[in-house]
Amino acid sequence: MTHHTRSADAEPRSRAVPAIPDPRPADSPPDGVPLPEQALPEGAAPSPGQGLPWARVRAQGGAEDRARAVDRGQGRDQGRDQGRGQGRGQGRDQGVALEGGAEPGGGLVRFAVSSHTLRALASTEPSAEGTRLVRDVRRSKRLLLLRAVLDAAPGAEAAERWALLEEAERQDPEAVRDVLHYPATGVWAEETLRRLHAPQGPPPDLAHLGALAVAAALRAGIGFKATLRPVGGRLALPTLGLLRPDRPGPLALTERSWDSCATLPLHALPGGRTALDDLDPYRAPPAAHPAPVRPARRLTPKGHKRWDTQWSGALTLLERYDSARADEIGRLLRTVVPLGGGTRSSGATLPAAAGSVLARAQAPPALAATLVHEVQHGKLAALADVLTLHTADRTPRLWAPWRSDPRPLEGLLHGAYAHLALAGYWQRAALYGARGAWAQHARVRAQVAAVLPVLRAQPQLTVTGREFVDGMAAAERTMDELPPPGDQHATARRALERERRAWCEAHPELAAFVQV
Image (cartoon, rainbow, N blue to C red):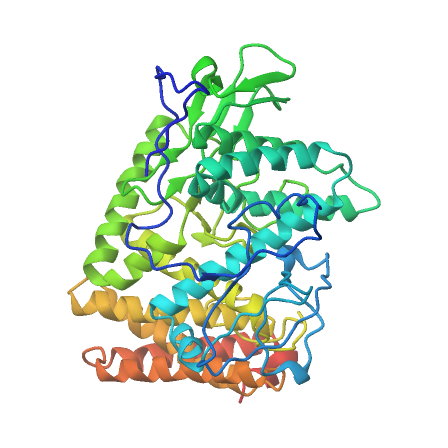
């Protein structure tokens, strides 16, 4: 989809806002059934957020679904990054609920997840209902997070910025939706909310809300006036890129500002669905937060061209070997953030940046596998936002064959889920004759098969979590229908057993947690 800005008097413009990759394919399924907006007392004006017609919590499923629906607490442990819930109890085994969200009467609007949808997600195989649930959970959670920021923000400036967003939304709802649900917006919102409630530390970056509003207004093509202060001589506009004014100080912005200033547009990857974000200051957590991976600095044109080549090659392989996963990646992945040099990781996923993957530049076969792997982390993170899968703490005590360090139950579950998808991808690639794919499949499948019984035996799994792990195990067993040739699977299992014994020797205090 291409969006153009236009002046208030609708005169032709000399240069359009750059084309924005449409985050949804044209044949995307509906995002859910919108609920009525929350009623306000007669004569009362809507506060920021209530005026947006699409700012409604969306519920999945219907009365016919065998829904698991209970309210979960709204309290959040700010120390647990990315907004994950706490206070999980065995009494909530059957529960699925929205992470907050008001419905008329002040209660929580609930998501309903049928067993069919849960099993479909557990298998890692793409499905229309699973994709729809993941997208709706992400969007509802983002709206609640933004509302929390607005409620906590002091002064009237935040409300003024939101009013501009509402005006833009009336002209182009999809443009505003894309800006507010852009992955980097989630990182900003979580960091801002954290700072608003922190008694000490750096002040919240509430000025970025103005950048969101201006980006939405430019994309909607409405007339507006706003004044923002660039940082380091640059003003980041989410989904668009950077404005680079020719002089320091506050910058007066109008609907013509993208034409009158030097710009650095966000780079669109081939295919039109996903952007390569090396510009947004919130594409990854701020440097003050310790992190195992860091984003790359702004790439050169040569770096963009290299990514275009690798991305096109990876998509070609995905569409050839596993078209359903290629389509799922297109629907769930809005941005790719290049990883900085020196990192040993091929990819990473940040729950705060839903719809984004951090990835290292790599050959197309490796990049395709990285995309399959990381998108699963995003799916499971969304599911865990509405389903209580386990009650375990973060103590690392479990063996993960794909890592050398002990993992907590949460980490092992995530790793097994992502590797289950990889095993399926490599099996399909092998059936198409991809070189080395059978060996990759045998190795990854052996790893998953080794940890699934350990996961299933964990007493901290809830009833729902146990059903989810059972679904994973069923998907792993179906791979028996198309085994690798020769003794590759047996060879992989023997190699894995040697690795397990070596790990237990290195961690004798944890050896008991490796056995079922």
